[in-house]
Length: 169
Length: 348
Image (tube, rainbow over all chains, first blue to last red; front, side, top):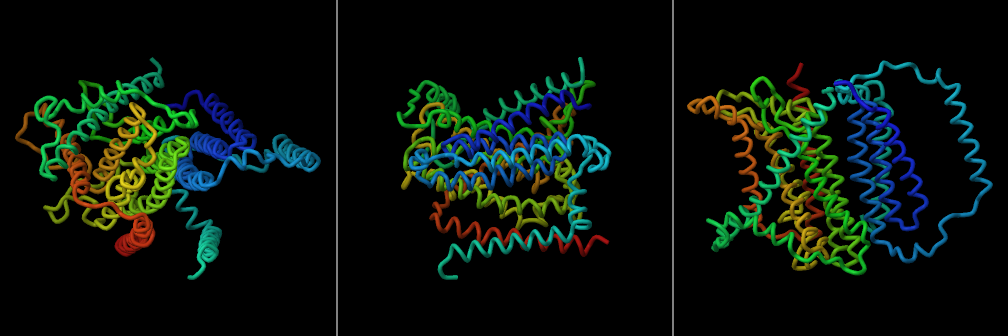
């Protein structure tokens, strides 16, 4: 079956992603921010699905939404929120923020207008193609070294967390 | 009619049928549980409403709808109302990728017995299960009550911990079948070992099955892992402040999750709808035999759930965490290593 109304889905999901990303920084209550971040991550997963990357979308939901954000929420629920609500929300650093925004905007504009050559024209995949195996293959052949480095990094992080949390090992 | 409209209509029709059947099954699973646990504890269970108490689920449903819906004063309303909806919606969502049998045929028209055939169905299931934590977590937080909060903290810690083992226990099966599609995993289990033993993944992967079963019990918050709603310490845990239909939604979500766990266990480890062909039956009945086998295996799973509920006491919280991380996770990892070694050495 041919995909239908793809542009509607794309703009809808993007709008949800952007609006909820803005909510993450503008809400005063940290629980609301966390929930907004969940919506951002979910709509990103939807966008991955539209790029025919079901594995990436699935992992995005399982790891980020189901794992990391739950832990965020877990910690926030333990914190006394009444105190946070009275704190000042934004640091008034207009100058730095403006410079950063302008530079980032210029970068985006440059890539948008002159960036065609950066990305080689790929063959658009079909919905029926299973690319889970391809991800596994390229992880263990072409990208073996970065993959192993990342796993060692994670191991170091785990050991570091245990060392910091335990008084006596 | 364009293809997409056909697709939408067909999916909607299938969803309605499946949800009605599922919710009826959920209601009668409650009845079964009360009956079986009753017999195990040497009493009758429900007997008053209808023969053998068979109309009890109906009476319960009416009672839940008619009860007063109390919303406590200091709850955070939007999330308090949304939490049970999240729970029940996600519980129902996961059934969408579960296949129930081969093609269904009505004359010349045929369609797979499944709402939607996704090629990463197992990832969808894991994803939906992992998102389902939010129902419980937000319910506890928005209730603004100590018992609810403690219950939901326990629930989120427990579900995040056991999700790791749950995901790892499935990898052994995936290695054997080489696909994430539930339909292909089931079809890989047709036939027999040595001519008499059904070719179920359970036999080579019985360690993975043990890990899956334990982790799934923890994910569905059932005894012996029902710490989030331990009534001796936490009144009713995360749903302490909920009444009427909102409470019933949490209840429905729990039992629907039990069905999903039973479906996935059947599909991954017990050959799904494959079973002995009952050739002595007339042709019209024959086409329903796979569905019958599937339902029968799910029934056995549910019975096991109830049996364990009637047998085991509850874990202590530190025991729960230690068991999850120090016993279940290493076993699951060892199983993956052994399975991949076997596959690596036997395939040329």
